[in-house]
Image (cartoon, rainbow, N blue to C red; front, side):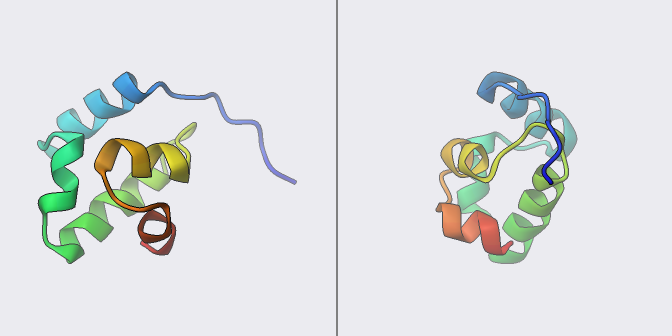
Amino acid sequence: MEENKAAMSDDELRTVIELQFGIAAIEVCNEIREKQDSIVRKMKEIDGVTIRQTARITGLSQTRVWRA
């Protein structure tokens, strides 16, 4: 069974990324692959963040986010 997670807005997630990683969310796609994977893995651990949302705000494909 899947737990109900409180949804996080895109703006809230962008702010979290900037504070936690010191990089704008859309700039994640310009980083080297290893750094992208590291950031995306940590983003996936945040409650209320979906794969689709992560892909949308980082500019990475959904498949890329799913595999990270």
